[in-house]
Length: 94
Image (cartoon, rainbow, N blue to C red; front, side, top):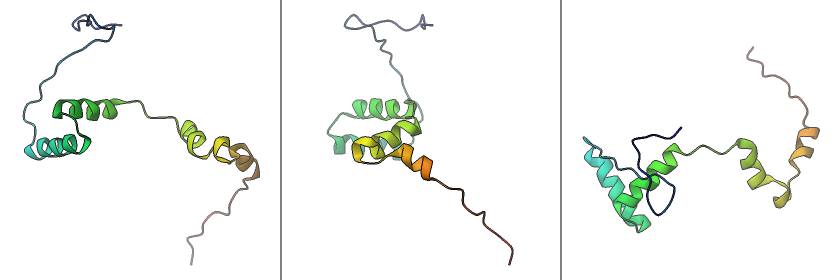
């Protein structure tokens, strides 16, 4: 359900909103500034990027394994699961 308080932009269907952050620690501000310089973007753009990454839905672990260790990279993940045998449990007795 759309938020009735957010206006749509004319250029696209994406909603654009503004936020203000009060009582931001000076160290966080300075770090954001350093990151912006390192990424060659404005502090505003850096803040948008940090927020976007912070609220992004994490990738599914299966997709991550396929991406880095899947068939495209020469690893048969299904074969690994078939060959897997149970291990002996650890013993904490002396």
